[in-house]
Image 1 (tube, protein in one colour):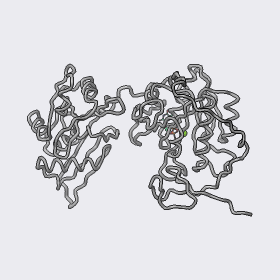
Image 2 (cartoon, protein in one colour):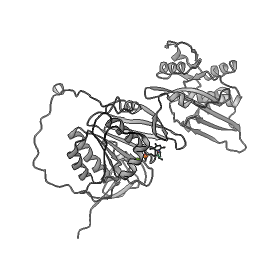
Image 3 (spheres, rainbow, N blue to C red):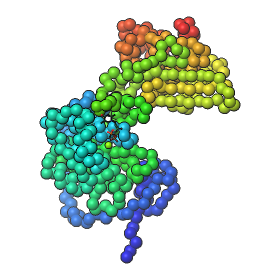
Length: 454
Ligand code: TYD
Ligand code: MG
């Protein structure tokens, strides 16, 4: 018998190669190639090709978007205003983060509007889903439930029952019969997603696909799927914090970087309508090293607290950590402080933390990081009604940031009375009521200001 032919796939990006490679030429990651048997395509269907004529763009009717609201406004926002019929949405995230819970809750809201929804699970039994549904509260509509992992059978069920929305939990458990590799392997995941895509596009059914992201263990990360689906949402959160952030990283029907904030409670996920309030909860007042800043997530301003602790080190190598922000950026900002203000941080341990578990890497946080470090180092408290944002350049200059007006408005809304911001931004702003704007040009001016207003 002839030896079965195999090919090698990169499990990160799906790059295909006839032999094993140490490094993927596509995505440059190491040790990511897995062996898969070659998929035989049936030759039936060939020869039946029809000639298709290209159409003029001007004569193509634009599709009117009739979105279905998911009933969860944070999810609608991330999707760009609701569910687009016929779209393929991937919801990725670590195991246990709450993907099944989020989609079951979405199903509940949608069936309440008398829309037919089919929830297909390959991971849990019907009894387990029922238990989770009971935790979430009453369903007033009827949800169709199916425990199945064979995609060919699933297609038959979908064709028979014609739901408007289908949830696949999870893509790693699904398989197509004509492919010999195991469920969860790159080949299966690719083919299964391809089949689901054809189903969505030909029938106009919206399909939500749940995909696990694990660094190790899972053969195929959903990275392979990202190219194929319309929308990619990532559900992320801190293992120690109860809040969860839903983030769009790809969206053919809306803007990306929009986020939705949820909190995991005993009875499911609860929307957090005012993330700023949530993030600033429990903030210490009148303590050195704590500074509030305004960051932008998508189109939404969120206020976060930056904390710094600078203490004398007992070792040759000072320790530096940055939680919730970019480590290299913090080191750079400390170098700027040393050089421009002559502050000796070389023999100090420095710990910088964005409180609340949120991860913010935008440069607008620079000013708050610098000020928090200064505040902890010099033991100066920053007024609890003071907020600041701005990018710090290498010469210590404070550079303008985008969407300054939204940040200032959010700060005023949350009751802050002073806002320190780049001078270049200040000139173009209308001052909202109740907040004083202080424009600064360099970190020297910031130090001067906080010394005078301690
Ligand atoms: P789950 O949706 O099963 O995660 P995933 O599908 O992403 O793997 O939810 C996992 C966690 O959420 C689980 O550890 C229990 C917790 N949870 C709650 O805290 N409250 C709830 O109401 C529910 C349903 C789950
Ligand atoms: Mg699950």
